[in-house]
Structure formats: C-alpha cells, structure tokens
Length: 407
Image (cartoon, rainbow, N blue to C red):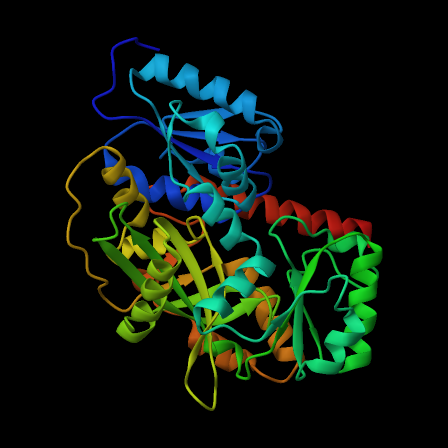
C-alpha cells in the first residue's frame, strides 16, 4: 500500500461471525463518505467480504475478545493511511469492546461509541430499566431477579403475559437453556408457572435476565427509531419505521419494515436520549400499546442498526453523519423522505411460515404485501453491489440440497 496519506481518514467497520446485515449495510451507506472503508471481521466467509464497497478486508480472529490485537491493527491502519481511523461497530460485541476498553482506544482511533459508563448502562437492559424508570421514560414495567427478589416473587407481582430476555446483549446462549431454541432472543410467558420454569432454567444455565411486562398489540405495533445526536447535543437526526413482520414472530427482529415519518415517535426517542445524556448513534426499539396508542421504549442499542442502509436510502445516513462529525466537517440538514420498504427475503419467508401456522397470514395476503422492487431496500441485493446476494442465494441452494440428500 502506498504511504501517501488518504484524502480523508479511513473507516474501519467491525463485523463479527455469521452473515449479519450490519457490516454490509454500514459499508454500503458509507460509500458516500468518499473515504477508504475497511472491513475487520472474525469470519472470512461472511457475505460482507464479497462486497465491492470495502477497499480492504482484514480477517482478525477473535478480535471481539482481544482488544490489544485490535488496537495493534488500528495502529497499522494509521501508518498506512496517514490518519487515525474512524471505527464503527456493527454488532453488540464490537460496541461492548469499544466501551469496556475506552482508555485503550483513546488516541488510536475515533470511535462510533458513546461515553463508556453511559453506553454500558444503556446496553445492560436490567440497568437501563432501572435508570429509565427513575427518569420517567416510557418503558414497560420491568423486574430483575436478585437476592431480595426471586423469580417466584416476580411471578406474583407481574401482570401477564411477560417477556423474559437476557440482561446483556450477546450474553445469551439459548442452546444451553432447557426448552429454548437456538436463535431465541426473548421468550414470552403467559402464566406465573410458565415464567417460574423459564426463569429457573435460565438461572441453571448461569445467565442473567430481565422480565418485562408485555405491551399488548400485534407485531405491526413494533416501531423503530434510528437516531444521531452530535457531541454538543445541538444537532440531531432521526429515522422512524414500522416493523410489518418480525422473526422469530412476536419477539424477534424486523424482517419486513416500512419507512414512516412519525414526528411524535422521533421526539420521544430524541428526548429520551438527551435526558440520558447520550451522544452518537442509537437504535431504539418501541412498541405501541394497541389500546392507548402510547409508544413504549423496549430497549436502546448504542450502535448502528442492522439495516442502517435503509435509513440512508431514505435520506438519513447516520453512519455518514457520525463520520463527518469525527472529521470536523459541517453536518447537513437531513429529512426522511419517501415511502420505502426493507426486506430480508429468507427471514421474511420463515416469518410467513410461522404467521401462517398461527392463522395470522395467508399465502395470498403475504404475496400482496410484498413491495415493488424499485421501492425496496434488500438485505443483500444491490444492483451496484450484486455479489453478496448471488453468493447468499448459492449458499442457500447448497444448504437445501444438502438437507434433501440427508433426508
């Protein structure tokens, strides 16, 4: 590589294992930065490595558990490009690493991560529930078991149904919990007996968890806010959207999402972040109560959303805003525009099967719901960056053939 400095500081995107949309989404959104974009990944097979939006792909095994190794690589990037890199985590492990080792990264890179103590507090769902309640933020009633409050006590106090989920992102291995399926992000309990059994199974596996009262309403009442607040707190940008389908259904992530400009929702989220003293990029999950119409904050993730390219396609490029601020450049006025959709086709098909099994969606209703291609942001497909989609399709066909041969 040439030792001549790059015109603009390089961008390092941190991606973990698997084919999460996060690194690919951020890479595509940052093509507008006109700067070198480097992908650092633990997994050389992840689909993001096939994207043309990265000027370089660097495989660094177990970087999420080895902060010194990542710091050493960032120093190499600084030497190669003549600028400190701007680092963007696209997974919970990356956000945690940057926040937990904030002092280690000082002077090595500019980071898209909030101030450590606040970021860790927001990311820890149990601690955030306590803080949000003390600040009067609109959050569901929540309980965390401790020495004074057992799962049986919670079952006696809570109004059912409730949701049981891990206290901290990434600290949840469903395969080790009796009765949970791999990939489970949260579990619904409809009775005290069911909650007690779930809680004891999770405790036996050694995981911390949070119990949150269920906000009534169908999956279409799940909403999302992606927001950016400048370091001085005087500038903010917001993108709001409605989750039309999620997977796993009722408790999972959005797989079919519609862009909807909802100023009231944006104000609730921005006001909450300002009350917390939060700066940077956040992704807030909401659910609207089907009877009262009130939006409730389910959780705040102190990182880019997995579909940040969707917000960028609608005029709110949060990753670019954060990069411009780090470079000391003027922040533009942005406005969410147009009616647009995001879809992860494979996960959405899986969600359709689950909804149909419960009698909530027919095949004809599903087909009629699918949007026009020109108004859709796809998880992998992009006309200007087609290889991730082609490889994803080929991998899926191979997996299906292997399963058929096995049967």
